[in-house]
Amino acid sequence: MSSPPSDCQAVRKLAHLGLGRDTIATLLGCECRTLRAFCEGEFLLGQAEFVRDLHAFQYEMAKNHNASMLLWLGKAVLGQKDKSGIKSLDREPIRAPPMQIEQPAENASTDEDGP
Image (cartoon, rainbow, N blue to C red; front, side, top):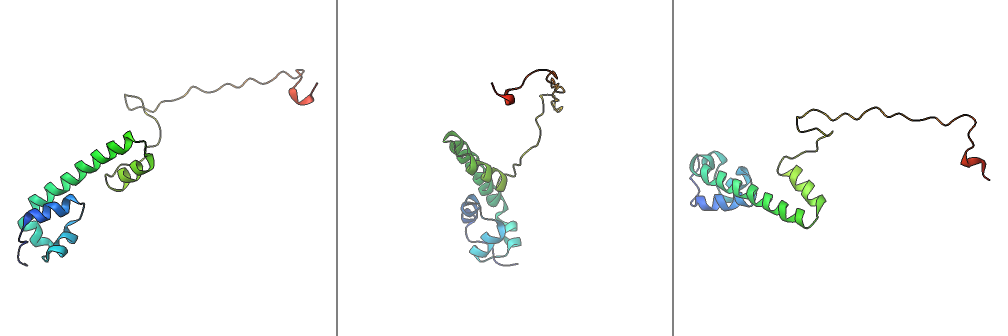
């Protein structure tokens, strides 16, 4: 096991930027398992702050109507995904009644014939 990081606050700050354990361990010159052993709590706190800030950013972007950025961030980072179909409040699919199309009468004139 390598020596522990000298400052677990650095771990928190880097995790707050969205960096993963492996990247942080490399930047701080230690092994990932050493990072887990000595600074896991700070890493998890920084990660939670990153997600919190991303949610806040998403909300601000939504207020400014930037839908494409919201969709990308939600899917790529927050694990959100498109859902197909519309469901009612009781979680059952909403079913539309069958459509009935009236057939024109055989002897009726159409607009295609012209005046």
